Image 1 (cartoon, rainbow, N blue to C red):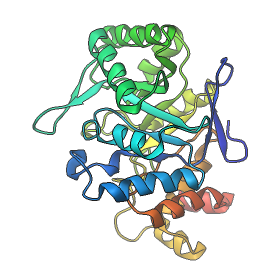
Image 2 (tube, rainbow, N blue to C red; image 1 turned 30 degrees about the vertical axis):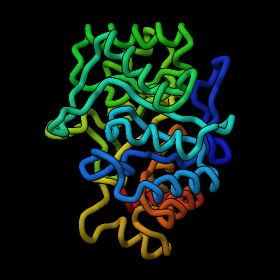
Image 3 (cartoon, one colour; image 1 turned 60 degrees about the vertical axis):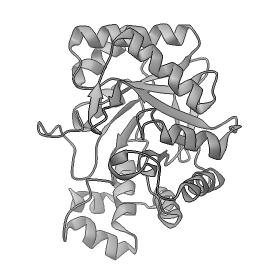
Length: 292
């Protein structure tokens, strides 16, 4: 649960992680369509270092961002890592040559991705790995999560989370072992699963289950694709409070649950600072009711 703008991941384990809010999502540091190197690689390195300097200690990445781009940017910018730095990566997807997103979950594929993440990030073990794509059958999901638990026992992974997880998948994982976090799409305008969404399951279905089991919930794409289009209550209230719509969206997320860990991404240091300041914005019960 959130305390003093921090949240504990893996509470009750021998090695819990303390993340400061908000975190930072690296996905937007890649090139167009989340493919290839950023246009300004030096600027991306500078931004990551500024984020750490300003107090961000939770960075979300994946070996399929780029692919291989954000992991290597993090290593170049921040290695050797501060002892309280948390790098959360994920496995379960790869990029096709046509820039498509291809889910996978066979044990050998998961092991190869974990090793790839270790190498790219220059780590001996991964602090937090999110597993899962919506395309897995129940049997394949169980096989994949069992592989993740085995990798944890081998010391490759410290904590295991889920990404794009359905309600049933989360229940299955909870039954099989310790789930440290869940990373699903969730925002002011996108709270339940859209069957036409290319991004898998959204968070509205699993957030209550996370709260029940005291599992931190990490909403992704909370800004990239999901801010209100055109005039809205969010715009009106942001103007009244003298903040940006993006800042208000992050504040709204933090007010939805004490288990919420937003990871807004940006390529702008100015926006990075604004996103961090959003954690200090207070919303009254009346303001939350107005937003709906």
